Length: 195
Picture 1 (spheres, one colour):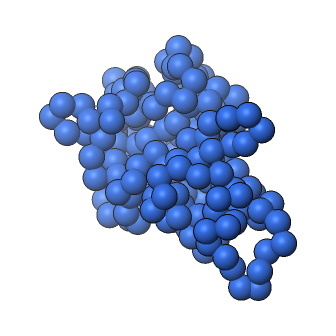
Picture 2 (picture 1 turned 45 degrees about the vertical axis):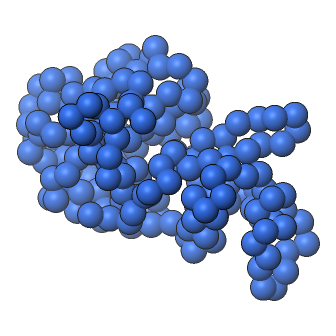
């Protein structure tokens, strides 16, 4: 899968080190403007390959804010293109502190996403839900409720609906509506955790 839009963070920000809350907040409007034309359920690749470091405070103020905007207001997905260990350690520490998770990947020579990985943490039941979607491909809450019984047993599929909604808010699964049902599928089926 190719991203619908790639934004070069070095070109957009103008520096190789992305540090500080204030600087992150100043970049956020530029990110909103640059991503404004993305189609519904589009994928946005934020390319950090020409940067030296992204700090946790900068990431929170700009890129987490963009991910949240994309999920709540504009229906797009953010994938971070960064294999720099120091930056990923910064994001991991932040994500672990706030119990959040972010998608990372690389791009191959054809511009396709490769080697996707998750940075941060998922609650155990969210992790189970994501693994179930990877196994099935696409499902609604009722399907997961019937195929993956739990102990103690759940009385309704509402718990699965809540987990699916949480994964959608984190930008890890794509949602589609068919009639009165919502179906979800993972953005990547070969995702791993961490570097």
